[in-house]
Length: 479
Image (tube, rainbow, N blue to C red; front, side, top):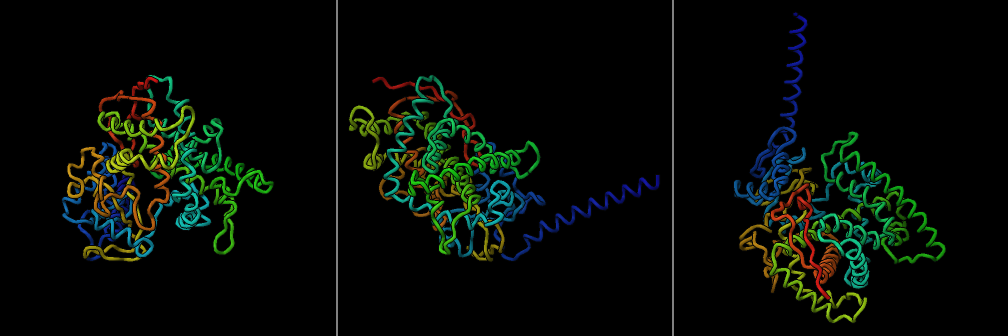
């Protein structure tokens, strides 16, 4: 019996000692002077659970806006995902962050992402992102986008013909994911075969789910499934890369036909070429970034058009005026048509205002001050679009859907930031907007529709997604 009590006493002592170390280590990160107001939350996990709960309830902005109001500050401290963090709120904070990229801040990615993109072990993800930004402009600048309009329209036409027509009810979000992934495969890899695209789509969705999951690598977890799926896709990409190298050598492929060809032939300032693992992981990351947020935005476009008939009528009128200028048959959209889509473009902006992507994260390169508060070196720095997008100071009646907000000079600088800003502004923003405009054109010229589920929440996991996938009834326009 005495040995039992001694063992119990030792266990209690060990657990108490272990907890005290965790608490001390947790609190020590918040001992700097002049830190922003806020709370470090629970040991280790901080306030992560509160953020996740508000996201699951469809109101992640509540976590940020409540604290902004509570502390009456445009920056507050917290602890998210086991990392001490400062959250910037407001236009002044946005301006500071966007103006100091690569000066006091750098991009940050969780360590577990290296398991999905193993090339980042050889070369940091930040280095790969920088390399990618030097490659993309040739394919994403306005004169390049002009060449894509007809391709976008062709892919959209095929998509609606096969997935939407002759259906009474569809669930939109899986279809927009299919559309954006197919379009990305076409433009990045020149893959047009629907069976090949479908072979890649299923494991690709597992990869995306794993990137935005709890980082636990055990059998059956989203991260574990993502790692296995990324290995499968990488094997497929290696085969595609091998064939493309052969085709380029034999003159059967063009150096400028897609991003894959460009990556194979482009070298850096040292004359070094990307190896196959780097190319495969870069293509995989590109597919993820080009796919997930845009597919959700397209689904939300449908949601708001179904809920707001007067918005639908405005878009329909504009798109039919363009459609009626086309010769009978298969004449495709062109760049001049895109320039005439002013109202539709403002509808997209309003969708992006109300449904921005998950807060972006940076890391402090060294300590710095903002509004008199110290942000220590190594802290994670979040900027949250909802802090301005839903602020009545910048957008009166912020919960009301109103595309006219973007007429004339539009919102004040640094208040509408769906694609970020400064050096780290999303390089694919023009690509994404063009994709959404072409999608909207093909949608409204074919169908009127209404919601099958009257009330559907927007979930955040952590990207904004429609809870039910936006099921709608379709009513084809009569010829």
